[in-house]
Image (cartoon, rainbow, N blue to C red; front, side):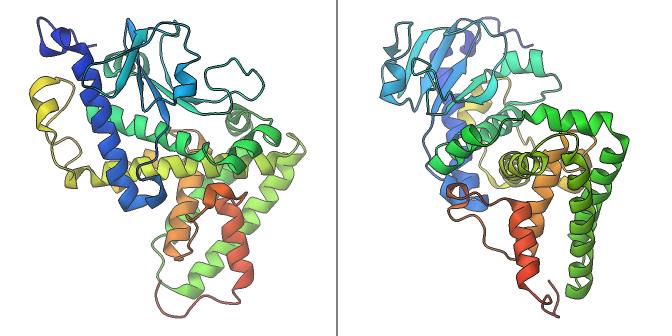
Length: 338
């Protein structure tokens, strides 16, 4: 954890909080143009936590009215400050409540995240503010997803299994993990295939493996397939945007203000980032498996040039469902290279 001695950050905590948050918003809008255009200029209530304060950014006025602590606007800054609204030691999540109308995030998502210093202490292996910012952008994308009423209602009315229950199956059932790894590695290998015929054959093999595994998993967890498809949609797309940001950092201008005033901001961070050199980012062994399988499904859809982003979260479509429907509708892929 960084210790700031008579530093700018210590003397100007409100300004630093604002500059970090504004930096994240600029990153979000930049990567939206590159990876998911509808994400551009999306506004969702955000709460940034330091040791002693909570900062509200882009706050919905109805949400602010529910805050029990006194909020005060910061002069010249589009942000509100309060004493900490809870004592949870670490935040990096998007919250929404469906039944308690007094809850801060009743039927409206609120993205909550701890400052860099707390995240470094609690999450570990955090090397730069840029890395922290990519985690926040991931959460902002969840906030964007849940601002779409169909997705919000579906997650409330249909989804009853926690994602941890899916990961538990992966950890405890050897046959399940082996199939997942085989399926995911197949998707990764197919990303490099240029023959349309070979691609279609590989994708049909993938569907066969996956359908057999999901059918077997249904005997262990009711509605397993519905939940796996949904979590791949939600977490896979957030991972898709997050990794797009890491790949595009090299093109985003350095933030001279943070470079001068924030020791957590590292010059040239991710300038040499190469996704192929960090396979844990898209393989299933390093993170919850459905992040990786979902992410790779989206990459396959991109390869097939299947348009899926428009109104994606206003429908119940999933990346797997779209792929399956696409293959069913095509008797054969085009013979030229893909």
